[in-house]
Length: 509
Image (cartoon, rainbow, N blue to C red; front, side, top):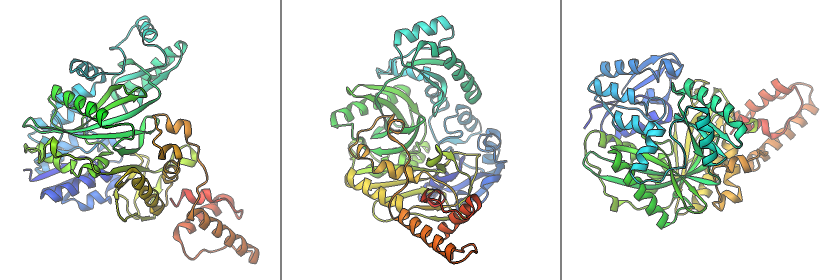
């Protein structure tokens, strides 16, 4: 077993790995940028090292600097978390070259599955169906012929892409040249490669992913599926396990395809295979993520496994502590990604100081977060600030607990997308499980929030109006820090005119 692990990440996932190290009796080494020196993963780790200025390319993406720190701290292994260098084959290779275990698959597998064209080819060889598409295309005439053969609408996708970057949807032939140019330019800038290919744009579809874990002793365990269809601009926002669209027969098909794929490429570690599921029940491979997923907690909640701890055990060469027949799905779990974005302003990023945090609790509630009073949210990094997860004996109870937890969650000082989550969780279509990947685009329109907070806002407005009539002086609010903050911003923005509850919501979600 490892003695010391460096965590090459930040935020909630870095803290999650620190805690797994604690459970396994392993010393944890944190790295941080100058913007994160006060963060919780730094405080909770056994050692911590600054690796550079706030921009990620100068800190969390700086392979040379992280390897330098790993050697200085004399660690046995590096855990990459997700994002940043988690799927960077060069980083995994650099670890290997320096005698440090990379907690993930081999550099060769990362490289193969990270290249979407190569991954499609491997899956076809393994007998896994893929979305209809092309190989790499460069000649304009060849591209136009392929697009006509596949049939519009199509997707132009970057071979090295991810997270929706380097991707364009094309509905008509005349849109194709401009889409190709934009996708190539964006892909070259973001991933260093302008290679693109075409894929059929399927709609309506569900985004279903399957969690796998495999050790170095030939054991492969499939841990069920996750429903990830609630997305915005190809970024997942709400995930759940299991999926309302997957019955026992379909689950067996998905698990068999995942097992076949993992075995074919010689995968070792945790990983996720993503599929598109259409209304006729057809399954097509989309891509594989060779790392821990943001949404891994929902799988943990319904299976009882600890994916981070098991990932570390596998990297250390140990056998998986369970077999496929030991896995039983129990209950239902939902995860809401809490981001520093304003849903009332088209999800504009929100930066600033978190002046107060109150985390929900109670039966079936889990919060993976690195939030603390005084935390600075900056433009430098992903807006994810917390993951709120609820479990119930069935989906109805998981939804009820999520609504409760969302209302209890108070984050003052920045705007968050909590009102968005509440609106979705109350939508009859979501409750009925009528989802597809365009749900947000088709159904979400921000509305003024209702409930206790709205009533409190109305009461506050009435109090302020009454006080202003009684005295010409500005009103001072003595309690309720969150509301006071909202009022101060209101004063600065609107003088002495009353506003509705929405602005107050933005800073008190």
